[in-house]
Length: 198
Image: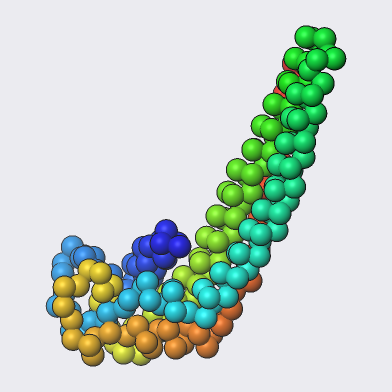
């Protein structure tokens, strides 16, 4: 789960920079004095949010659904392989070679399907985390206006800060109220391109 957490932290600050709130290291052509600073723990915001916790069981259920499907497919392939090996003595070399080619094609199809599902699961996870990220950005912008903050820093970019600068709990409280859960939706697989007519 570390990859979506780090992506969340990076995306959160990127969104804030675009919206006009200065993240760590952002400077204009004419730097202005910073009067008020806020510090957030982006990783804790994500990990402790109710929305993120709602995503995990949904992802586990989706993974199990596809694992069961592919486990059944692998069982069928093992049975087919045993049958081909047993029939080798009664098949002509040409027929045996044909059966092997057909079996390899089936194996490659299952492998492609598994890889495709893994990509779709990654996209589903990223989409869910993205919804939390957008809501967190909105909340941080609102807090920045209310508290008249000039600069937002993440704790990983700060060696030391006073606890009073930390607005993580405020962000997390609002996030849990405004977005208590996120529905994970499996994206549709892109249809295979039709072969070009000669």
